[in-house]
Image (cartoon, rainbow, N blue to C red; front, side, top):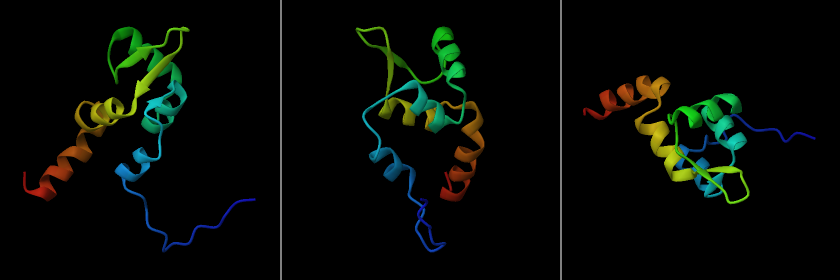
Length: 92
């Protein structure tokens, strides 16, 4: 059963959303956050682009939440327009 969300419900900020996430994220979690396919993340990892991935001893991969957020804020090629508009409203 789905819970109804009223239109008056506050939209959580990015900081609030990231605070609810674990410190180490799976490929699937990062793919959902960045709205890309998990194969895209694996290709980026092989080409050493995108957020930094960390190898686990058992062969899996994890992404540090703070590194994903920093990459999305500073380096994400399709996020530049949002950074530019934010800078314009800040007067920077």
